Image (tube, rainbow, N blue to C red; front, side, top):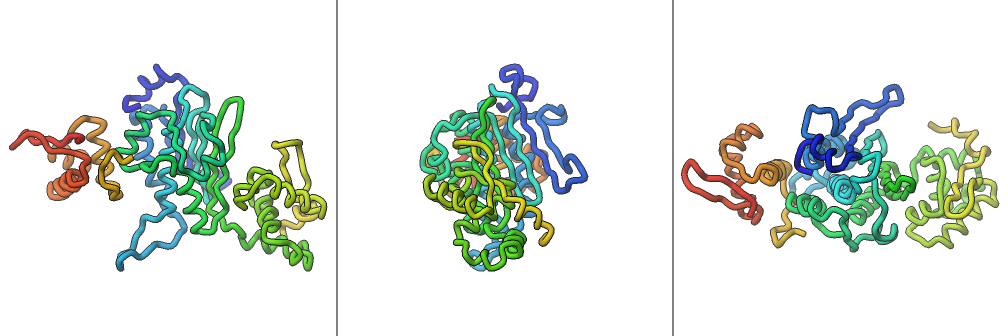
Length: 349
């Protein structure tokens, strides 16, 4: 997976990576990167570094102050990076449709070809690691991405809960097997949905409990709600979710479509028609690497070594910055210096 797209597809004919940004309805997409366009290598590691700053750019979240210093990098940034890395680590590259990552105004959608090797509940709660591609996992681990085994989706859940956004939506699809993770950067109780419900239900809105409001809000924001989705939102079990949904159907607020686990619940016309009322760390330090340190480390992984001259030419760093990065990576136990004089090189430790 370090090579060129052509050599990768010789081994995995269905291999395909696709990143899209769509911020308006007027255009098909505003920005796109695909592995097969021939202008870059097309491998998974270059893909990760090509898109990761774009996908985390302009996140509408407050910055943190740590020891008096403004921290631009937040738990949400880290969670999104881990979600992207997990999609690349766990994908089954023999299956069709490839990896598709979409960024919209209020959501991220990450889908990859595979089936879950653990239960959905285990995936969401974390603590269980079973990477499909062990070597890819190790490479990302060296870079400090996805380094805590089995913690990816747990970190996403914690980050989204911290922001009081709608809980992550993990969906398993079949024929072909596919996992879809939707991360909505929308409040759990957005004002537009609450205003709609209050304007339609009037005094009856006050008869709803918080769980029932959450179910109706999700159906409004996401077009429909399912038992599994409500379990994720409320962190509850199937029986309780079913009772909530059945109550809302009986009251005439939701209508069901389908049977069994595939049943979807939609807002009834009474509400929809009033929608216009509102608008492993491998024994090394756990210190988080900077983006530039990761770039240098990835260069070494890909090319086996780097020199000060190569670092200056490749990344346009000054010599002093290159040396600072090398020393930091050495102190962290990531790389080592070999040779002397003009033959000094830096390699993985």
